[in-house]
Image (cartoon, rainbow, N blue to C red; front, side, top):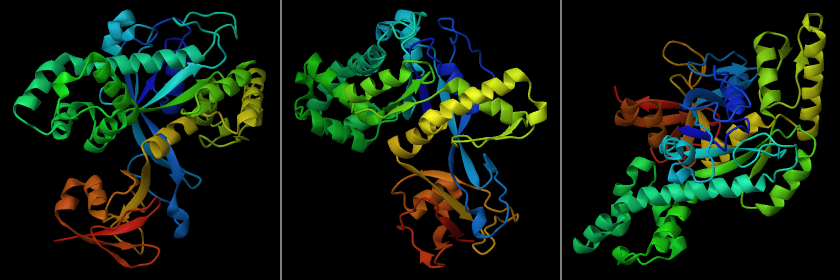
Length: 399
């Protein structure tokens, strides 16, 4: 799974990326600070079932803190986009192409309105952040349209001449974009375009299809960053009314990064996404640190959290509709063969069968799969059992 962090330049994309990953990336208010895409690992959070056996878990990857399990997800931070990016402005084509493999997007905007359409600093509140939602939606849609138009004439003529099924041909044609059959089928149905004569589609028809397919296959939430700046809350309410089809999450990337760094240095105890934190070493804080943490506490008080963790969790669990389940080798001790307790927390699409889930743990498991045992009920599970969020399952394999 890959989540793309996108938006115009100078809105706090790299700060949000660093707050999620603690990766070593440059952060500044200069336009185009990020040029090459940054890859790093972030973590979605879920409840850890270690308490069911009152033993501490031993994650192979990710980590667990006070009963909260953090499961790794790959993140991609691309350089800032500007209006006309799909035409190459601001090296836009290069930046957009970096996003081809992304499963979903977190679109970061400056909800305080303190950066214009080119990402240049302006007086706080003088710029309407709604413009950024509209422009980026247009740029991403036009990018998709450009990718499709490049080969559409030849492709559509061959489909008609060889009397091939358009749906299956599109699945094959766009497999490199991480687009599946169900998504293409939904886009064809929604647009109502004739599938028998694709060569007769006009540019407007193809554009309509491309925009719809982007919305379905590359879903997006809005991270309303800099929500801690005066005037941001009013802008946030306006955006929610103007864009009811988007989930808009207020956040403060700077606040989250400050908390992560303070926790890293044992100054506070903080679980990402929580509505509070504890001072670990009050005597170790200087006046500047105390004021900074007091400011962050006020931000959290206004919104319930910094919003940063919520953005990533929402993208994975709501937009992409994934769950987390825990495979084990011993259903009584909840261990693997080396006696590690709950070593694996596996992300899987909601609706996955147990056999499909086994294949996500390891490809050989799907090949040798026989069945499973549920921890809660101890009942045996078949290949078609639908894995639920939080399930702990012993997977039984042929020897």
